[in-house]
Length: 475
Image (tube, rainbow, N blue to C red; front, side, top):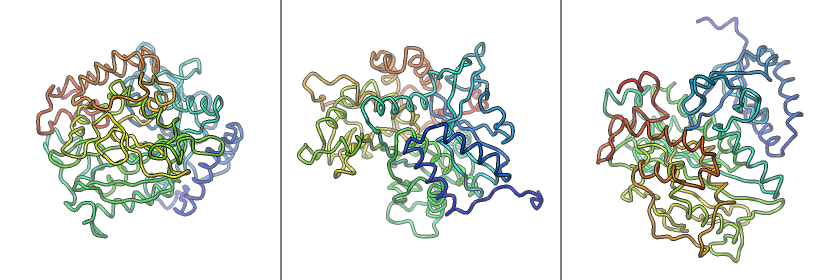
C-alpha cells in the first residue's frame, strides 16, 4: 500500500525515551491528574500526526485488551467511553454487559512506530460500572487505589520490579497451532552463555530491549536464559501500578516483535517437557519519605522487622495465594523441584527453591523476591494480593511461618484453597473470588486432571493467554 500521502507521527528512539521517561517521572512525582490530563489533551489536540489512541485494560485473568479510538472522537468523548463487558472473560454477564472506560492520563506512552505503526500513542484505562464507580473485577484499579491509600495513610511508596522469562519459538501463532502440531520448535539450542551475537534469539532480545528502553523501562540487563530459546530482560523498579503496567507492555512488545520476525514469544510457564520453565520473579519493597523501610543493617539478612513481618505474612497465607500466583494448569508443571522450582514455602537468602528469596541489598536496594509467580499470572492481581497480605494479612502465632511446607502441585488443590479462603474473600469480595475460581475451573476441566510427564495440547489450547473463541469451541 502506498504510504507517501500519509504523514503520521514517527519519533526516533532516543527522543521516545526522553518523552516516556519525562511522563514516567510525572507519574512517580504524583503530579495532580488534572494537570496531566490538560497537558495530554492539549498535546493530542495540537499534534496533527496522531491518528489514534490505543486504550488498554486487563481482564480478571490478566489478558491485555486494546481498543483504538480515533483521536478526534476520543477528545470529544473521553468521559463517555463504553464497551461490551460480556465479551470479556470474567467480566459482566450478557444482561448487564455495558461497562465504561476511564482514562488514566498518568499512564500515557509514546510508541515505537516500527513496532506498532506510525501515528499512535497508548494509554491505560480503568474499567468502570455504568454509574462511573470502579468495577470490582478490574484489578488494575484496585491495585492503584491500594497503593494510593497506603501513600495517603502511611506515607508508603510501594515498589516492584518483575523479572519476566519467556521462550521464543519458530513460526507465528505457535501456541494457537500447538493442538495441531503437538510441539514447539526452538529457534536456537544455545543457552545462557552460548548465544552468539547475530543469533536469532539475540537479535530478538536486542530489538525488544531497544523498544522497552524507548518506552521508558529503564533497562538494566538482558540475556538468554538457561533453557534453549529462553530469554529475560530486566529493568528498574518503580511504583507498583506502573510496574504491573510494564509487565503487560513487556509481553505485548515481545509478542509483537517476535511476530514481525515470524516467531512466537511465549509466556507459558512450562511449554517444553524436560527443560527449565519460565517464572516472573517479583521484587518488592516499601519506602517511606526518605528511606527504604525494608532495610536494617543490623537485621537478619539486612532486612528490617517490618520486612520480615511482610515475608512471614505472605508465607503464612501461601496456600491461599497459590492460585493467584500460579493461575494455569501449565504453571503447576513449573513447580517441579528437578528444575530449580521455587515450591518450598519458606524464605532464604541462598536457596533458590524457596518461595521467597532475600537478595543481597543495601539501604537503596534491600527488597524481597517472590519467586513462585508464573509469567502468565495477572500482574495487577498478583502484586495487589502480595502487597495487601504482606501489609495487612495475619501473622502466624509464633511470628514466623512454618517453613516445612510445599506449594500445591496441581491446580485443583489450589482452586479449593482459594475458594475456601477467608483472606481472599475479604481481599477481593465473594463475587470476584467466585468469578476467578470458576474461570480457572472451567479451563482446568478441559485439561487432563493428572499432569503426567508430557505437556498436553489441552493445557496450551485452553490457556487463558492463548485460547480464543475458535479454540475454546474445539472441545
